[in-house]
Length: 143
Length: 143
Length: 143
Length: 143
Image: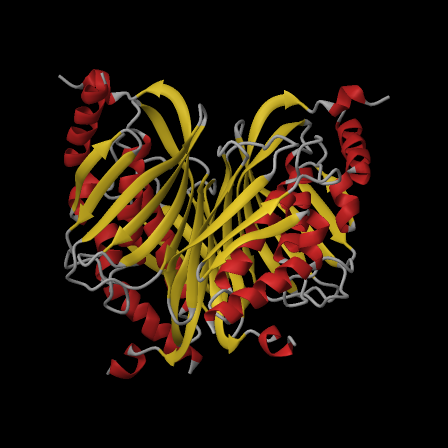
């Protein structure tokens, strides 16, 4: 059952419109744990010509979303706090790793770190999800 | 000078690659205050087919970025906390309003609210910027 | 019923051990809204001889706690984000005002501001509560 | 020099009024790392008779404060985000451990975890400090 959930999420993630739009790819997924990479896109610059904070956050959110739904039931974001340590180089592939630090029946908490290709810390996030306790809807939709 | 700064930021914002990518448009800009709208795009869906949290956050971040640079000197995001109250309807134009609640020589703090077309609250954010105290670089680049 | 709830919370607040310990006093209470004041204590200093951040946060948390339980059902803190704008004068009475910005069946969100006697902003907080949906236990315990 | 800084902070911490008021004791201190314990006090209860969120946060803030000043220069809290996972037992000694996850010339970021005597996670915090770049004033005041 666990493997079925994970492979179903992997499939959904690879078909996700927003992930494709931003060049994000799920690399690793286990219960409560996800790694997502983002290949730099030409059109993610802000008014300074740097990578937009929204793009970096989107990478964080993608890793968070996949890790908190990895238990097979629907979890939605309640609150996320992100600290930006340093701007990434425009050409660097970024990697977000989400780790579950607490799980209860109603909520789950994650720490997500974004690093560049050299392993330097770009951003850190603490995120809180609400667990609805219902089975992921797409598990039953898939062929 | 103030008007020059605001019109220069307006121009940068309308040419910003990420804003175009996500369908965001700066609607109002004053010192310490910005309103940005996002027209729903087909390809901003998450694994549930809902608007991705990263897209909603990008709207918040765009309003934050523009409001904290509106004083004419460079400000960068240090920390942002977002609470998601309810998922938006996929077809609704979203609006983010950023209001400055505190300004010092080194930092500035903003409250940003995202509402849908009916004025219902979708997300709320508290954001902290570091003020570098240097003139916006693109003010001097523009013709 | 509403008045009964509010007066019962007022009574609990005035008898609260932690409020007395820190010199905190509930000043105003309405559904989704609370104002609490803190009279400076000799023994709330940190290693620099300034008011400890924990004391300022305690004032915020007291206002938050009372406002989110003001609807008559139990609400508990899930997440709180505080930004410190400036250190308060050691002799100033501090005031925290908590305002509800969103209410749903399961969660509620508040903005809490701490000001000094001159109305200058000391700290700002965004706080999220989980609503258990059960009646406040002390409503039935009171004579 | 490092040892001198650490032993000076240890001394200030043990004499700190607020630490004594709340039953907090610095247990371990290294550059960028601190462990503080809090022995339960009778008078730290909230309106439900549970440990007040402000007391738990004060423990977090004490560990944060000591860890971010451990480099010998003044650091002050800019922003702190705390998630409450579960209420602690009233009799349990609580322990907060603060770990530095990023350090730059102007800012430093910490993750602080509160656990009970059994090692169960009570609260988690991400905290951001501003580094003033001036020597700790009490280093020169001490005999």
